[in-house]
Image (cartoon, rainbow, N blue to C red; front, top):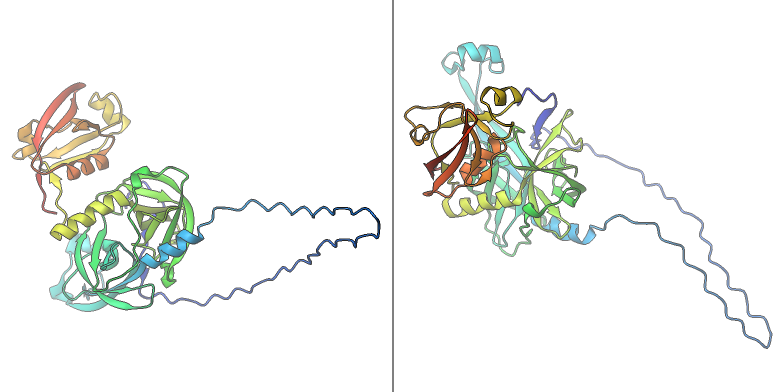
Length: 395
């Protein structure tokens, strides 16, 4: 977690020890006496008088109606539970960072034990034949053969799932269940989202199945949050709580525009700031997992970059703080051979401006494997063009 933030970054994952308290809310009926206007009896005169119908009361302005969209979308959102056997040390200092730093994790001295770890979350059904997308942290950071993943469908059926693949860098996992004829949530285009646009978050917070909350798009392209290595988050104020992880963020057309992932909170619960992986990124990861069982990304060789500060920009004679500065590299690497040097500021990659280190990492990862990338860097205030090959990272 970045020390710049005093607020805690909390992955929205329900703990296994959660016990749902029963909340009882008394329903207050406010019955207002309504009296219909009486139509006076016709007077026995030779001239018939038309009676004017009473003017209907002007309806109060209502908010947006999500009933149809929500009613359909909840059919494509499931509960996910993952049971893992985790080996933990018996050391009484296992959670002491000072002891760990100096002495490490000495299993020989204290031994270790296996414990069962249950994680709970949500998932989105993306195909009628049983493909379900969720968060990697919902199924577990280290999936093993012994990991048991169960999908609870909206019709109450519980089905064992197979883990097709996971991607820790984006926090996406793909599951498959042997069920057909399922209702699905269709993919939407997250790149078309507008600030202030209405969205719904659907999932199972605190094991409350198929919960729907509404909010707006607060921001897009959020990075450096600490949830994943590869970040490009949608920010929303739709209520997201523990258990919502892996659930659906949908637009008013009922399309999947995001996978709910985390919250920004002081209390660990909802405080109006939630984050979702955009559907454009999630769909790319899902396609890779379906085809290869893993995600292949572009790579140019070892290169450690950082964001520019005002002081750093002055030191390297950069015109502004836009870009990513190279802070570390290896002399025997392809990046060094291509001509890059520590202190260079990367300002463009394949013709697209680079604003910060997170964006640069995404650009490299998304670059087509086997091509030659063109990088523009600033070195001591002078622009330099660098050509470098993009190879496969394998993961």
